[in-house]
Length: 96
Image (tube, rainbow, N blue to C red):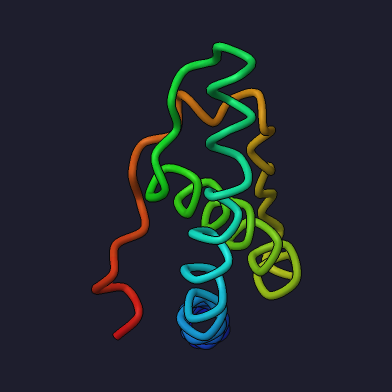
């Protein structure tokens, strides 16, 4: 049973590392679209790393639902309305 958990966790971390290579550039591009909208709507500023962290959190939840679901765990998605409350998780070092 422990070996199964270790293999699932290794698969999760490997997939997350690969997905982060796409999320960082996409997150910065999305930030260029979101930043002016949030400025005009007078909402709190959201930096590019916070947006990338939100994307990483949801991508990790999606990967975990696929890879770790057979182990009986549930992973919720973070709604867009909660983006101001997300702690910075993703770092550029996570790519390596």
